[in-house]
Structure formats: structure tokens, C-alpha cells
Length: 213
Image (cartoon, rainbow, N blue to C red; front, side, top):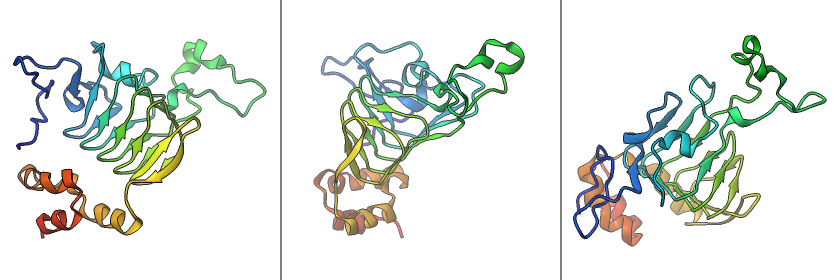
């Protein structure tokens, strides 16, 4: 089966032949200088917005000093949100009140938190998950529905709850090491198409046999 066209805004075609408006390729809809999304990563929403960048990362304003970076082949469910660093208030004073944002002369240089939020490749972010400022989510991780995630999520971890905690791993440590070495998400499209049976069946030996030299 061929890969979906990463340049197509709505990659899912319904049985009646129409495009499913609620699922979009992120690289085609995120017109924001601080957001980068890799090929084949998509988001779904039951009420698709006009501005996907503002919808997914409502505090990431143009001119902010942080970035949101999403890898390739990620899957983002309805209601997931990225609360990026611009949303954070200073905590080192006697008050968290952001006095400088109300003064045009001080506002431009005032951003207490400038950490980037990084999502790896092949990450599944479930329904209503909340990704907090500075989170770094490793390749292959699963973020469960409603999870509140901060800090670093290891590759291929399954995170659930509030606060989000690693409940288990998708594979054994040796298998994870092999997958991270393969980096199948960076392969050419024709090779990933060939690898689809291995990816769907969980056959790591087959995947390794297909890998480029």
C-alpha cells in the first residue's frame, strides 16, 4: 500500500469519495514561524479549526522565543494541546503576576521561559493530552488520553495520568535500541512502503532486512 501524500492537506478519503476534513497533514496547515512538523505527521479534530497552529499551541504567538518541533509520522488526536513556554509566568519573585506584559516598552523582551517543546518521530498523542512547556518526547512514545506531560519522555515509553508517568514500554530495551538504530521514519518513501508489512506486524527482523545499507 503506498504512503499517504505528505503534501495533501486532507490525507483520508472516505468511502463516499470525499476528503475527511477533520484530519490534516500538519506540514500543510501549520503556517507559523515557530512550529515545524515533519512529513506524514497528522492531527485530527471533530471540529476542525481554521487556524491549526493557534488551535494546537494557543500560547505560541509569532515573535515568541521558543519553538514547537514535531517529528515525522506523528499522530495527534482530538483535544491534544501544547502549552508552550510563552504561557509560563516568572516564579522567582514575590508574585507571579506578569506586570511587564502590560507595558509596551517591556513586553517585547519579557519571556521568563524560553524552552523549546520537542516531539520525536512516530509519537502517538492521545485524546485530550496536555503537553507542558519544555517537554521532550522520545521517538515511538505513546501519550495516553488525558495525560499531562512534562519533562523528558523516553523513547517507546507509554505515559498516562496526571502528572504523566511512564507505565510501561512498548518493547524490550534491546528492541528499542534496534529500532532507534534503524530510524525507519527517515527512510525513502519507497523503502517505507516496502517495510509496511514489517511495521504493522511487529516483525523487527524483517524490518532490519529491508533497511538501507
